[in-house]
Image (cartoon, rainbow, N blue to C red; front, side, top):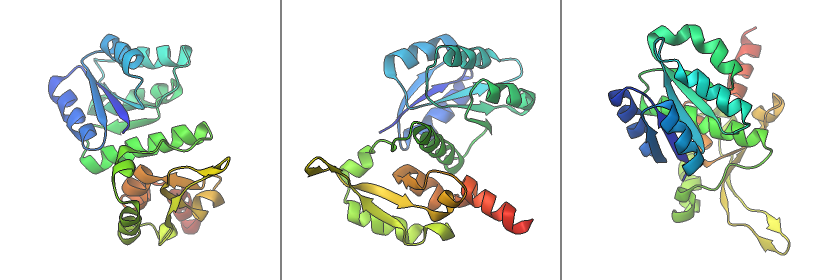
Length: 218
């Protein structure tokens, strides 16, 4: 299970984001940037989700601190309507996504799953095995995801992956090998949460699908 750090000065927004995160992840909450930095050092979260408003820009200082100290994990910003002007600087400081508040469950899940996949792609390593994969029947999960698949490139492409390490195999896990991602220069293998939330969910958010549609409509 991934750990998601929620940083937001507003109690209601912080609780709403924490509730969204708790559906699939372990959650750490912080009411301000200083508490958030302490949470990072203590809990080593997989993803951070922080609020930004025009009158509450401390998160930009947080991004700069993380960048300067090479604390490498994805940060997503959730912005109020008046904070759009800060998107460019936030992305330059290392934010992985700039999302508009309020978020529904599907948009939150997609953003976190894409951030995790992209982060581990950058490290050239697979996304860690999830707790759900460890405790469920993987054959049933594989069949379920293939039935639920919405992306045309992922039809019947979910399979169980394991590797030989020396003379022994690793534990099997859910995987999808996507020819469309490979075609557009992206890592071709995606894993359970990305498959669940993007390939079998909001597949139009996938950058490979977006590039494919842009090319075909040109």
